[in-house]
Length: 80
Image (tube, rainbow, N blue to C red; front, top):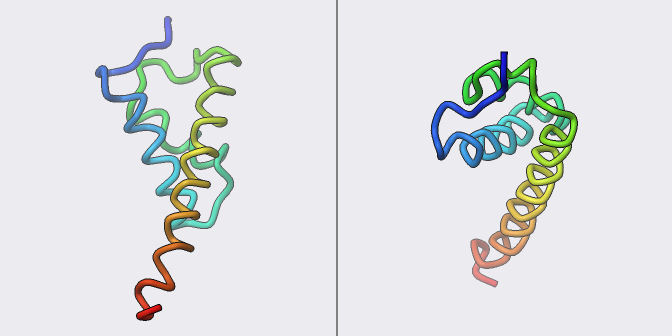
């Protein structure tokens, strides 16, 4: 069977879910992706290596953005 996304927004949702799982459960992005992918994809076991690599890369980028925002938000929260 062929790999595919359930909806147009599933790819972005999968990346967001991966980042969220990685932060909340303190697990690696690749493990979080493996847990998130079945909810958003049809036949997730058929994903190409290239697409998997792209998802991991984009998830890492989003994770870094979230961590940067959290670091910048802490001084403002303390009145600094």
